[in-house]
Length: 394
Image (cartoon, rainbow, N blue to C red; front, side):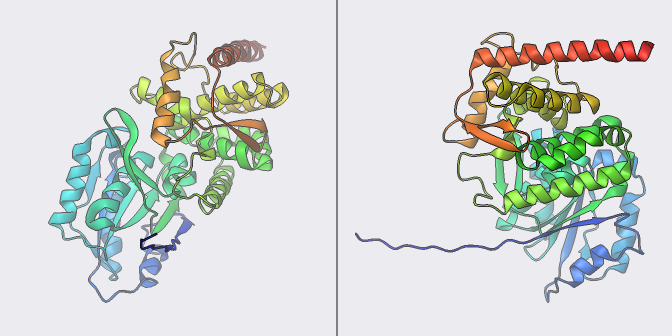
């Protein structure tokens, strides 16, 4: 044999910080972060903010400018870019091109930072622009939703939607730091607040039964937006997520995707609803579908499947949207299986449940059993609605 061989590894490390009022002058967390990363080079920081966040926090831009007038370790770029929030930010490639152009115009190099403040979609967009500009500009994430603080904003994925497919373009590029500020959660509407809880349920179901039972016991507090309960949920979910990333396949080179439990139908549902269904809402429906399918195929007990459905219902998730109902083998949602396999590559690999906290990978899904699972969930929803109506009347 006549060849050369190269082998090396690259160490990544970053911290998830938990705080309140990140940009208050009396909060030294962000300034201390930059002091802890000294550099002889001039460093700049370019902020990109979710438009929905600026609407709820109209003084945020001024607070950032005031903070960085005091923090001399980095130079604030004069423009703070506002982009649309939600999945629309990932659907518009022009936004990505505008961010790359801003990198060029403001001379943001690899010693500098791009900071994103917003929900998961905006973090994905900005992270992708940071990862490909100059082959990698340091990226700071400041998630503002439950979903992004406990799941999407703390991982290593970045990307945008392209050719009608979710996350078709993207990178694996860890941030240099994540700052979770719980004050941003106070202004979320109930849908956005609830939506992120589904990812905590997901990771509990595949990795941590005690966490699921904690969620089950605290559904009333979570539904009532108790801050202490939510802060605990976010931190524990984030820890489980980080532990998984630190495993053998952080950049997903294999076919296994346990953290995508419930996601094959969720991604398709989002697309079919034109993204009017939020990601977390779609994941809740996907969890319900795959949990009941696990029961109907003999992997999971009916008692456990019903406990999962009840937790989702108690948190006011709609788990039987007409779009996700599978009535026959021609149902549009089933196309999500093929698209899920195409996106991941390799064998179709779906995680199902053998118990709460324990999963099993399968490589095919029986369409008739999916139809049966969909009907089962519809029956549960109808019965649960009737019971709630009786309780309300009494």
